[in-house]
Length: 542
Image 1 (cartoon, rainbow, N blue to C red):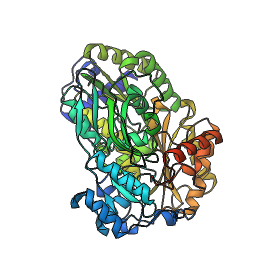
Image 2: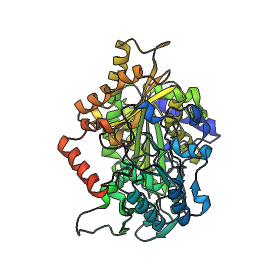
Image 3: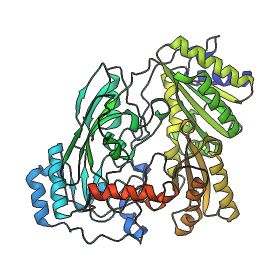
Image 4: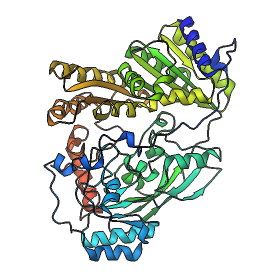
């Protein structure tokens, strides 16, 4: 066991030209690095040219345009031109496709107008006018969502936040960052890096996604295990309500026990209650010492054992505990350059990527050393490597972050983002595959080609991807609502971090009780009585 692990560590050193020390390599220093981001606007992520994407309204025939909404007129456009400069208004049909189609090329709206305000006051004027005239609106950030929540269904006006991208203030004592909602996540992280801090969330789409969209979807990502969710790290919000009212709650206080915590209503509301225009968020100090290890295992029981032990032995320095299965690494190797980064000598049933981050390298290295020696001694891992430098850190993370792209290149991919107790996490993958096999729909020449499982063990969050030859009603019927029923039966959530959008809103009852859904509807009716904000989504529509 120890020999196999050590030989693999030497393999990584050979690949990068590094010189191996006689001491265990996990005691060698590694520097913090900002991981390379993929752009979700890159052409290779699209399943088909925009013109071939089926309209969402045709894909979901039960959706009917609400005729109480006014259709856009020249008079309306004239008003918007009075408050926005010409470059902030898009009407060209070709340019509109960028805003009408999601990055997966799965959802396509029919908007005829995109507005790009550059101030909160402009957003206020836009929403007040739209509310007074019953014009439906879709707030849009970086358009990197996975459930169709950020693109129109019919002819809703798109309000893009791309022009609101300024850092308003930063307190280098408390770490409180205040910024516009249109700031790109990676740009904010680089801004904070120069000041010794970092953003408390990290996503594969960080090169394109907006912090306002992150807040509106309550995005989770790769740092949630260490820093928690946005419900905890967001200190305050500035939100424009549907009637144009500006709700100024950009507090930078960590403690404020006066009245209802209204910002929580808008975190994860997916733009159905208002438009987030400003965000105050608590940025933690940037770690001075980072270690990343990649481990190969035979069973998911071993993955669980390694996770449990990591909480005991790594505790305060543990910042990520990610896993993926054999099917996932095969796709990465087949479709991505990142597949060549795999330093393990053979394929394994399961892979675990562990990251630690702290302020004292010697302390962190000693803890990781003890942890890894324990895993080897108890034969929990079969193989493994530890990054020795920044390049190796990036290469190991590239494997994990490349999985969504690799899956998208495997055909038409049904993506499910579910959470549940960790002991049954991988059972969802096994049961789904068994269902497809029993239906004679899995394998070469069949409807489905692969079932892939990966995700955040520390958060109990599984990304279940089911690759098919193409999107069909027959394929969908084999997966849905089965996967949602399975999740509910195991005390889970049908959406751990991607949200509901138009793809999961009618399955909300699998995760929330009737009384909870009714209360949500009452909040919606109170704040948005005309229903103009992001209609046809989030709450059950049928």
